[in-house]
Length: 150
Image (cartoon, rainbow, N blue to C red; front, side, top):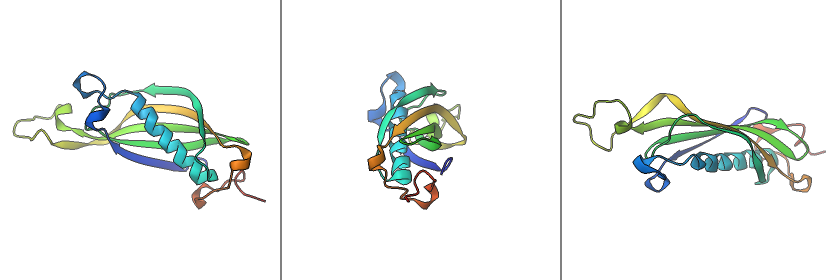
């Protein structure tokens, strides 16, 4: 269970653009990490949990409207009611006009995969599930002595 990953994919839409040039606010990454954290908690203990906060957030590359993102999270440490998680955000595809690609004869809708994916952010956060709300794992891949009901 510790280290078992949850992955979420999303395309940055026009409404995600926050700054000139279609730059997406870093808060969008954090928003999706919240969804990843929630899914982790549902899988490990059958509750949507409460996100307590982040102890670290780093933005390492810009994200733009049209980028295809992959948000990854995993549990690093389990307490009685808290779960320390790590998060990463990767750009897995981008619009060709955001690259150094020759756009001569290429449609403005052209996109390209980012190989390898570009790390755009990392974070460490903690989530909480009250003891009374812990139902045990709902996904066998997330079984842990903490979640095994006696």
